Length: 239
Image 1 (cartoon, rainbow, N blue to C red):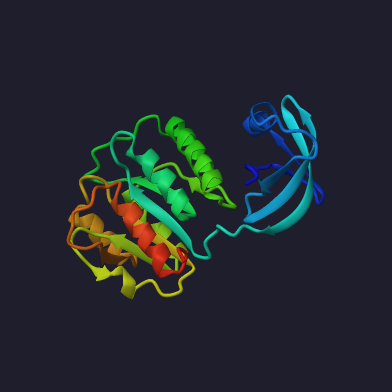
Image 2: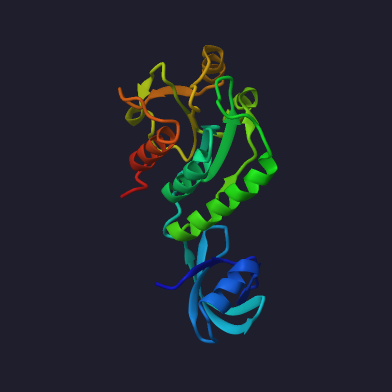
């Protein structure tokens, strides 16, 4: 299978890779004029492209065929994930992108074990992880990883969505009764300490629907991925 790259420079007939992608294609893969790769424009379209020139820091290509990216879900799910300790957020970001999340938004809440520290620096790493996962999974966009929110700012975001699902340890409705053709879904999961009662009340008041993930206790890095996989299955994205 041809390698996939996200190209920043496009015209109607040509494209170019620069930076690490150009280095990988030109130096690591030793591409030559005439070799074929798959380019992604970051907007959900793939292009078959033929290499026309290889320089140390730039690879130029001719566009041959354009088509919608087959791997992009038709439902847009934003994962709001309680900020976990250690490097668990890296794992959540990687797997959420593979499963089809459109965006990952970490947040700090009352019972988070982790505390904010060098978030701009860490966010740059999360963005790189998301980009690599998008390439590996055949995605046509690179999902954004936002800087962390405080949970008090989360309710205001929920008006953007057709449905907001709040995975709550206090219980709620089964997911299968709620996911029915919505195009924009917010999925909210907690960190190690879960949610304070007042946080749950504010999310519910803002329109988030409490949902149950069953009788088993899931770790904070397991719950968002289990819930995301369930939403993707119920919306027909894993068929």
